[in-house]
Length: 512
Image 1 (cartoon, one colour):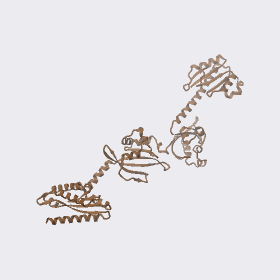
Image 2 (cartoon, helix red, strand yellow):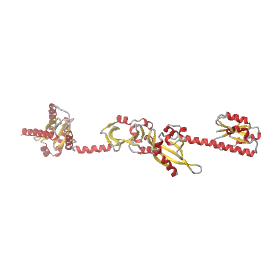
Image 3 (tube, helix red, strand yellow):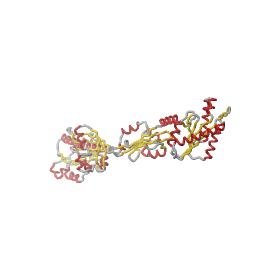
Image 4 (cartoon, one colour):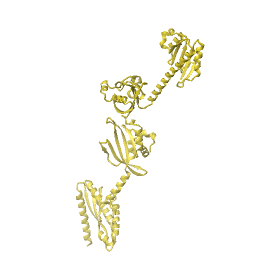
């Protein structure tokens, strides 16, 4: 800031007194003083003993300029109000010096006031939240730019106006006291300290939810003269702050937060590593598109109406291995029970699924042959009896004699190899060991009589090759039953079982 004095004085003594201040540094904001060096970017002070010149300077006055007249006030009474001051033409040097010192203090106060006001304005305008200053009766004395943007009014239009005008609600609604923040102002002034409020606010654009910090303002005598308020609009889920970021980042499983239109707002490090995305590209991440392109759904959607959530299971390949994730999409409900966003959690259940598979395999698999066991067979038949299928019921002929004579180890080898041959002859079949030397094969696809006979004969030849000694040989008897989906499980099984035993009895009779 430059402060220039134009000295238009006839008195050499006055010029000498005033000129002595040019070498002194006043306590101003980076302010320099010069004399008779007029500049467009300087605050100009004309000091003259000519009434005509003083009047002329006021008529052509720049915005940042003042005039002081040396002489009798009667000479300038017609334009006295336009002058900064009128000084005597002649007085002692000490008095003149004291008067000039007061003048500098006056300008110091003026410049400081401008700087502090500018600092306050620049500071609050840089804040992304709403900031306002109110007097005791609730009139807005000063607001920041974000406040203006929110209410769609200028600072000049807001100054001195009340709540219902600024927020475009009727005076009747304001007087009801609902959703207008009246009580919190009184509570803050009564408390005499900063108070925090969660305030629903009614506006012309609908309801808003504010997290508000209010502090009482005091005058120089210690009396409360109003309040200052800072409010964060949390109606929109995207406005949540640092605390949420810290929470999201420290959750030990993949998580993202989206707005009501599913635009990604936040993503923790676990999720970024999973999808391989940089922090700078988070805003461009489309969750549902990534889900569709990279994960395979393996379960039906499950909705929870109480928690407004939906979950489903997906498989994602990571390093050529399948990983199972439960994907939970949870609605975020705001103060007014509206959906304001979503958070998505991916819970890795790979270990649990692998363990479940092991348990199911153990429960449904025959330990010796690694085929399905009787339990699995019965569950499958009961659950699929209404579907077309062909059932083959098999029994190894002469197995008991071989097992008794040559031992269980030899018998186990025959069972294991017989199971292997069944898988070779019926590669698409669901093959189970029912117990002992009894097996079943379920064929879900239609098969011709000729192909069926060929496959059964091939199986019998393979089984017979396993053992021939001492007049004994092992073969396989097969009973076949078909259904179009109209027969019960018991009927199908009973028919196949009877046909198998009929064939076994026929072969036994032939040997005798």
